[in-house]
Image: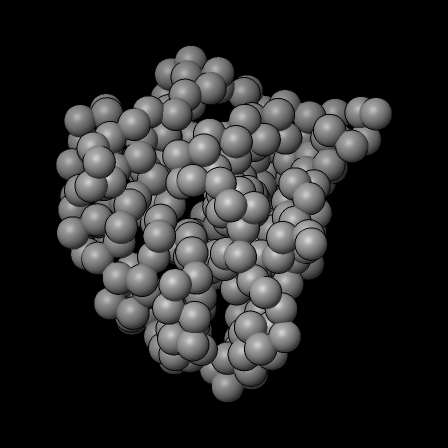
Length: 267
């Protein structure tokens, strides 16, 4: 039976991030994708121009419909616009307390536009972090969550990762894609210690949806029964290739999307 994953995130009308990126990633990695849409955005590679959030009840109903009918192997969250939506998501997931959950604490789009209301951050920390298998902040999100300066070395990344893990998450993947240097280094912080995941940095403007894609790829791995470190390593390899192939797509006039189906289209 094909593995099933659930994405709980916002819709990107430009197709490069959010629900669209997640479902493409699931499909590319051999996982059947289901979804709960938490926001509609008018968005392209240049920015976010409008946001409409559905009622929390509708967000929860989508999750409940999926979980009552599909054997979901893992879930991930992305854009969760408001505290009320986060409360609804957490309550809906209570029926599946053992479901592996990847929380991507989406706060700001690649374009710099805000994707969450200020009071929603506290709700995300208190309601979702304690049940998260993994939280995946980039260095800007980690700084916002911890109130620290943006990490500029691995020691600072580890300290902030530990601070976020102390908020209740079982593990934290500190993403270094926005930092400098020839290597893009992500740092996993867990009860077992720390582990580095490194890949050559891809010089490209096609970075739209990278965080969504990575967290979705990790969730896909967990849905297939991979251990956490194995899922992260495979997701890192997949994203690195998608970043490089995104240059060949050449889509959009701003921060273009990665190429989610690079392996399939190359055949």
